[in-house]
Amino acid sequence: MRCPFCGNEDTQVKDSRPAEDGASIRRRRSCPACGNRFTTFERVQLRELLVVKTDGRRVPFDRDKLARSVRVALRKRPFDEERIERIVSGIQRRLEVEADSEVTSRRVGEVVMETLRDVDEVAYVRFASVYRNFREAKDFRAFLGKIEGS
Image 1 (spheres, rainbow, N blue to C red):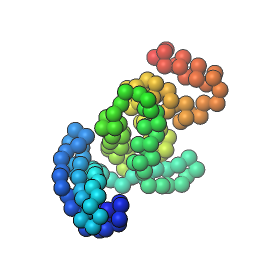
Image 2: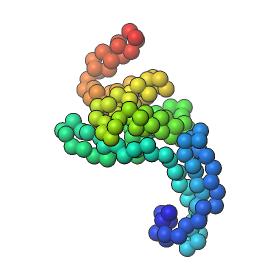
Image 3: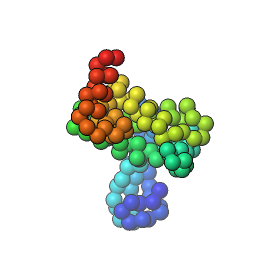
Image 4: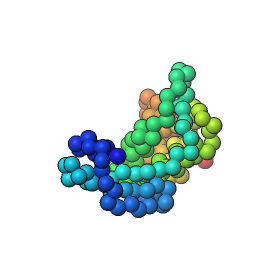
């Protein structure tokens, strides 16, 4: 593993332990060249996913992009980083299990919305407002009416 501080390719693992309820391994590493310490995570990846965009382009699934979206939706909500990582891992695992090798961007959005609906209603509405491209207050009212009606 390359040191993110100095680029040295020879770093050492100082400690390893399960993280995210056993879904990944957390490793504390140190760099003998610069002395800095950093943490890496190792996760199981069932398959390489391609996301089919609405314009037909195929791009590699980007876990970091998914995590950023979930973090934005959960901003200032009572969720610590470890719980957010578990949520993101759960979404990723669900997509890997459901899809062969390709998943539509629409399906990714639907899975995120379904997950957030079960986790935090405010985050669900925040994500939906961006995903469904709400433009006016009436769009929010209509969406909230559907939530309250279900």
